[in-house]
Image (cartoon, rainbow, N blue to C red; front, side, top):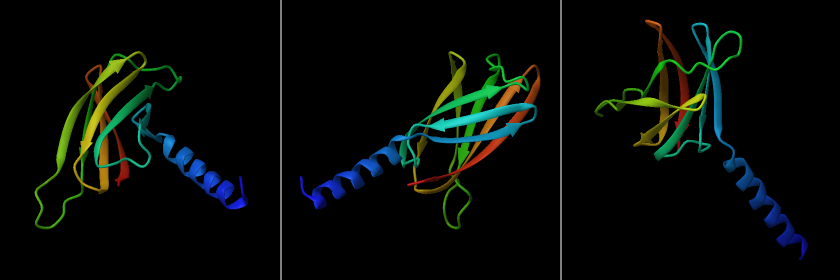
Length: 129
């Protein structure tokens, strides 16, 4: 293998590894810590799988809540609103949802947690490609 082939192979491997990692972000929602993971990094136009972990102040997973995901694109002139909602379903100690992003650009994700009659929200910003 010559030097040029080796460098190209290293470059492709580096790019592949950087795209293989999931997008991750953490925010607070009231007393809870909310972590989201999107299976694609960067998120893409089309289907993106979302994993949501919610922890109490002691770091224990919260599994007895209703979790709603509201995702939307900021308003743009002469365009219809792009605002979508989906329920996140509990799988083990985390929640899962699927977002279908219809356009590249900035999107807001609002995780709405309802537990024991109280509602908390965490807002994330992503850039779909």
